[in-house]
Image 1 (tube, rainbow, N blue to C red):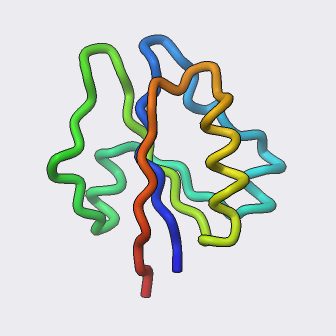
Image 2: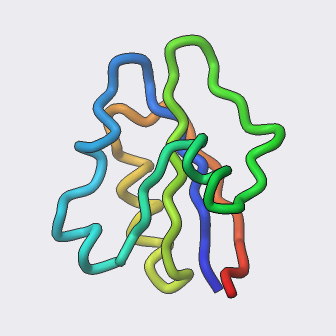
Length: 89
């Protein structure tokens, strides 16, 4: 089981600075744009970004979700996020 986080970044925020290289390596997190997530087969209908915001999709194993969630909760550039369980075959 995996978890996808739909992350709305505040205008001007650097999405690349959200997670350290170490965190991405340890959690094997996949961080992608909304457009690229759609190309990978994820349903992105109904997900819209507000003016000036960038939407990032973060996919991690369920066991690592609490670590990612805590990081998003304190992330300076995070305007909001939603967590969704997903099955990846």
